[in-house]
Amino acid sequence: MKNVWLVVLVIFLLGLSLRIIDLGTGLTTDEILWIDRSPGFIDAILSHQWDETFKAPHPGVVTMWLSGISIKAFNGSGFPAKLSFARAPTVIITSLSIILIFYFIRILFNTKIALLSATLIALDPFLLAHSRLIHLDAILTSFMLLCLLSLMVFLKKPRAGLLIMAGILLGLSILTKLPAIFLIAFIPFIVLFLSNETKKKSFMYILFITAIAAMTFFLLWPAMWVSPIETLMKMVFDQQSGLEVAVKSPHGSGFFLGAIDNGNHGLLFYPVSFLMMETPITLLFLPIFLAIGIKKLIKDNLNFFNKNIITLCAYIILFSMQMILSLKAFPRYILPVFPAVDILVAAGIYFVFKKYINKNSVFYLLLGSIILLHLSLILPISPYFLSYTNPIVFGGPSNAPNMTLMGWGEGNDLAANYLNEKPDAQNITVAVDYYGFAQYFIGKTIPLDESVDFIDGVDYIVFYISALQRDWSKDPWEHYKTKEPEKVIKLNGINYCYVYKTSRH
Image 1 (cartoon, rainbow, N blue to C red):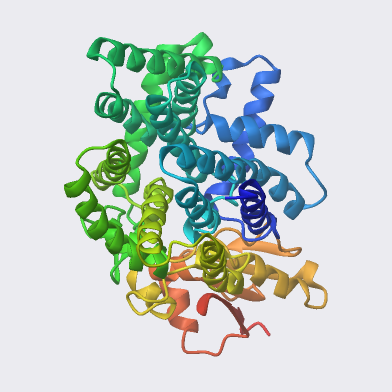
Image 2: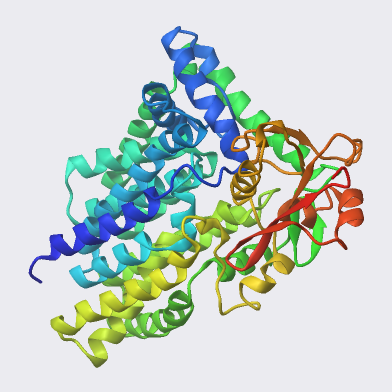
C-alpha cells in the first residue's frame, strides 16, 4: 500500500488535535490532587529530599515526572493554562503511542489491520477522554499495550532492542499505576506461548525483562534509592487501607443500576461499563471477529497469527478478571482493555473486507467511513469527551444517569463561566456540592453540605450530577429540585449542573 505512512500521519494528527483542543476545560476531581503532587515531586527531587517523592501508593511516578516538569517549566497565566500544561504530557504520550502501535501491529498482522487499529484507538471515545487528563489510566493503558506488543514482536523477530523496550515499558507501567503488576504474571505466558526457543532461553527472556523493569522502577523513583523496602511496603499497605476507607465510606463512593453503593458493584459492573463506553462499530464487529476468528483457529490451528489473537484475548479477559476482583470499581479501571479490543475489532473488519471486497482503493473509503462515524459520535460533545456513552445500549445517553455514576467534575467549569458573566461576579458567593468549580470562578466558592445554611449569605447554588446521584446534598436538593433552575449545563444531552439563584435575591 503506497503512502501508508502519510495515512498514519493523518490518523496521528487527528488523534492529537482531538486530545489537545480546549485542554484547559473540564477539571476532574482526581486531577486536583495530581496538579499539586506533580510539582511537589519535582521540588522534592531538586531539594534532594528523596523520601518526599513518595506522594501516593498508586504510585503515579511517571505522571509526576512529566507533568511536574511541564507545570514548573510552563506554568502559564491563569488556571486553564496551568491545567493545559499539566495535561500536555498525557496528550503527547497517548498520541505518539498510536504510531508505535501501528508499527507493531503491522509486523504482527498486516498493514490493513494496523491502519484500522490505529484509527479505532486514536478515535476511541473512552480512551480519548482519559488521554486529555493529568491522571494515570491513559498513560498506563499506552505503556501496558506497548509493552505487550513490543514483546510479541520480539518473539516474532528477535532483536535485543525490543526486549529492552519491553522491560522498560513494564517498569514504566508499574511506576504509573499498580494494576500493571498483572503483566509480571502475564509475560511468562506470552513468552512460553509465542516463543519457538527452548524453555531455558524463554526463561532467560523472562528474567531479562524482569531485571530491566526492576532497574527502571528503581532508577526513576528516588524514594527507592534511600528506603526501597519501606517504599514498597507503603505502596502495598497504603493502597489497601485506601481501598478499605473507600469501601467503608458512609456517603457512598459509587452509583450503579440506580443504587448508591461503596464502589464494589459486583460482577455486572464492568460488562455494563464496557458496553456503555464502547462504540456501535465495536459492538457490531466484535461478535463478527469472534465468529470468524474461531473458524480460522479451527482451520489454521495455532499459526503465529492465531497465537497473537489468542494472546490479545487472554490479555483482555485476564486483566478484566483482575479488576473485577478489586475492592473498588470505576469504569476507567478497565481502560487498558479498550485499545486491545480495538485491535480485535480491526481484525474483524479486515476479515469482512477481505472476504467480500478485497480492493485497496475501497479500503481507504472504508477507513474514511470509520473515521467519519467516530467523529459523528465525538465531535458533538467536544471537548467534554467524558460525557460519552454508547448511543445504542441501555437507552443511550438519556438513560445513562440511571445506569452508572456520571460526571467527574467536567461541566462545572461551564457553570462557573456562566456565573462569571454576571455583573459584579467577583463579589458573588456560590455554594457547590462537587469539585472543579472554584478553579474557574472569579467570585467566592464555599462547599454545600448538610451542616451549612444553604441560603443565608449565598447568592447561587450549583448542584452536580454525580453528587446528586449519591445524595451528597440531599436536603438542599429536596428544597430546590421542584424550583426552576436559572441555568442547566448539559453535556451530551445529560443535565450535569443545575444553577439556582437563592431566595436571597
